[in-house]
Image (cartoon, rainbow, N blue to C red):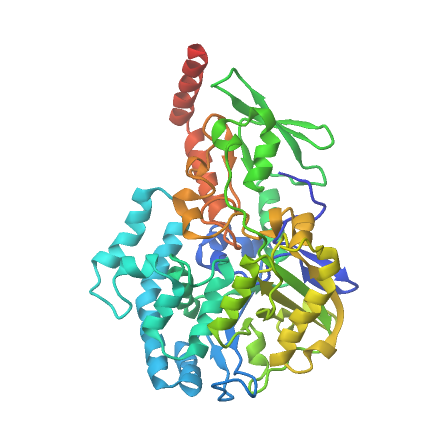
Length: 511
């Protein structure tokens, strides 16, 4: 494995940002991979991976005094479904608590089917096999027909099930973490994922998000693999006549040539296209997946205190602090993003995992990550992110302070990752942490493009694609890598290799 960065793991890595303070560079909470089975398959606990469960996994504050509908009771989402329903009943009423319990019952099997689809190749037949039984074997549910639910918007789903705007806002903000607003078609399943969190919650590795990468590297070393940092791939080595081209290895930035019959590219699909250069076949050369105009802005703060939310103790700090009480806040932020503007009213998601992991900061100090979504990479008025970074960060800190008074005063040091810095630091083109947009038109067999959705590159034998650009998309998943590995192994079986070699030679003869 060759990596151009001096830090292993890209957006799943942790560095000592300040003396004694370990700060994630990308992801912090791991959700999808904990449902994939990959951690268990690779026995990563034997190689040092330790997860701390986020339980409660979600917290949504009460509206601040003066806001309409304020009742002073926060929402706390625990692994314990009974405790969650009790919190919903206290804040939103018994009817919504009962509806939530039924929602988890209905969407648990549906979301489990999505998990299986995420772990398989995205062909129409395979997708139908995973999803069809949950519709054909069940009667009509309060959520509507299965096709309507899956193809509909998250907002429409929430409106059918619940009456409390506070509850709908919290679930919509969770669902929106993949990028699309919950008003878009096909976003209902992103909301439905919460049903699984009552079985296996999000987790954060001890020592930071990079603990997952370090365990993977240790497993790779135990299997005889090697990792080289600071000397990444500069170009693909390609041989063969036109129409029968095949990859023979890579040349690194230092000029080193590594020969191999198979190259698996886990970088951005457009970075892979650049590595292929003039040897890129049409399927790769013409790839133009939607990258969007940025995704979000991240604050990494060293503080001398944890956020303190009125009406709840430190249990609210174990998971995702969903600081949204009305979906209109999300709509306004997304509308500003569409207009190429910084959100006038940013919506924060805060995480403070040093509350449960003392390895992240010295005694008396904490690490708080604040995520603000829908910040444009290119601003409509041509403004420079180097100039905007500080005022945008202050605005986002103030948005947290609105719900946790005193938070702004607790901030000692601050590292700001604007959309531009995310691109510069982590090679996330246009600041999109998902590589490619996660809308319905860019998922499953359309990701990153229909021609490249099978992890192979038609017209360039031996090159395989994986990573967030491919199915099932961004987030800490591992599914794409496992699926790509299975495709490679299948292609490398003797019979498959013989068929490939015969086909390769026939194509060469035709030329």
